[in-house]
Length: 253
Ligand SMILES: NC(=O)c1ccc[n+]([C@@H]2O[C@H](COP(=O)([O-])OP(=O)(O)OC[C@H]3O[C@@H](n4cnc5c(N)ncnc54)[C@H](O)[C@@H]3O)[C@@H](O)[C@H]2O)c1
Image 1 (tube, rainbow, N blue to C red):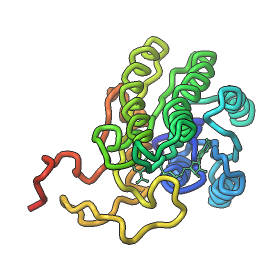
Image 2 (image 1 turned 45 degrees about the vertical axis):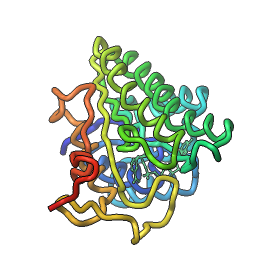
Image 3 (image 1 turned 180 degrees about the vertical axis):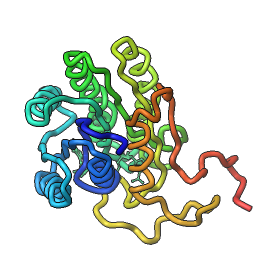
Image 4 (image 1 turned 120 degrees about the vertical axis):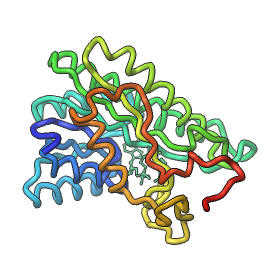
């Protein structure tokens, strides 16, 4: 097992990418803190993991709130013993064009998508430093952080920030033996903020000709969080079926 006895905090683990990551981490031997704003979702995922003989506990927190992030890291350490891994998975999208976007919407998307990985990263790193154990932080980026889009102004800005912040986090936390990496999805499962899988979502047509599924991400996140990825630091791993390798205007053969 890749993550035996590691304690992992996974934010937004109530559904989709975070949920499958929590389930896979538990199968790989981790004790999982299933964090979500939605209590019912977090409790269901944690209960399902325990029903399959895994170790998991549900935690309800708004990870855009500084005090709640600090308390969460302390509560996880108190309940599960320590903190070894943080997966900063939470994000929300505005899905709006600049002329329709309010300042309030911009601020909330930035708070949840960009400020949260800073706040949770700092809170988890504080705990890892206290333990003198090192650790791993996996941030979730997006191909939206690398390209302009015809909507989602705030989300594209926030994800561009997450990509570069991950590099600075890696540099600044290296003295404490904490690795920081970015996993970059494109069109995985249901769109961000949506419960239902959308069968009309475009498929990745470079090779697989299928939509990405949450387990595609979970497997890469588990690898990145494991010691197998010990020499990967500060960089981004694209899990997008290859779409961002294609020159704009070109098409798959
Ligand atoms: N799904 C995709 O196609 C896709 C594509 C590119 C990037 N991503 C990235 O992958 C990550 C996961 O995306 P997803 O589609 O699985 O998300 P999702 O919207 O399906 O799930 C996010 C979960 O986070 C929870 N959440 C929202 N705000 C919260 C807060 N403030 N505090 C605590 N919990 C909160 C929600 O309740 C939800 O359960 C995100 O960072 C997203 O930007 C996803």
